[in-house]
Amino acid sequence: MTSTMRRLLIIENEHPADLDLYRAMLAAEYPALQLFTASSAAEARARADGVQAIVAKAQYVPAQLVAELPRLEWIQALTTGVDPLLALPLPPGLILTSARGVHGPQMSELALLLMLALLRDLPRMLDNQRRHHWERWPQRLLAGRCVGIVGIGAISEELARRCRAFGTRVVGVSDARATAEGFDAVYPRRELARVAAEADFLVLLVPYGPETHHMIDAAVLGAMRREACLINIARGRVVDETALIDALRSGRIAGAGLDVFEQEPLPADSPLWGLPNVIMTPHIGGMSDRYAEQLLPLLLHNVGAWLRGAHGELRNVVTR
Image (cartoon, rainbow, N blue to C red; front, side):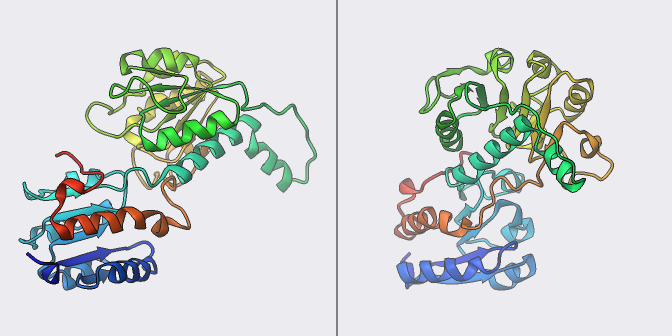
């Protein structure tokens, strides 16, 4: 099939303005490609006739749309996580690729923000500012501390490099790799409790799946030192939230920085809202003000490989 017959649909629900950038760059690079864009599920279904490829964030690909596209060959997720897509009845031959590796800067910066805010008790400072109250206390440093990172990939390596620039020791947990750039040591998952006991900050960047469901449980939290904090920027269900709340309430660990939760949006009655040793963000870890620009190199490469039929050159293929 020639490129003149190729039809690709781009869906962007959250930031429709990005559609113009995607369209302009893809049209300039591949003028024969037939491009369609949509900013809602209804628009996507209305414009998807004959489409062979979809580019969208994983959570915004409707199951009904996939079922209605018999010629669909490829989905490029604009997210690292593809859990919502894997939950769909995808055709056996469909190729799925992710945006793994493009989120390093924003994920790393959020992890560091949470670590520094917890170390220096930023909420207390902000509360004092609101109350016009002058209070000083010794400031704890990130330098010289140990950061344990659970799950090693492109984002973890970028975070490790940035942590090292702050003068920290960085240790990792992974069954897939024994060494990694920026890490002082890497341990297998069976030694997770050892890393938890050593780390001042235990940072979660592991993918979610049956093997990682509630991997941070009461036993792992119990292995952490009372001065240590948990940072979860992975997936909410990696952590046993009930066990975490118990550990935070009892002072078993010093605090937590949480960007993800077992249920999202976080219910208004969740105890996490009121815990003074918790800093929460609303699942913004992967977001940035330059997200489309970050994605374009990967998108341009993969669209080109798909148009040439060079499926072996596609980056970030997800094994199903």
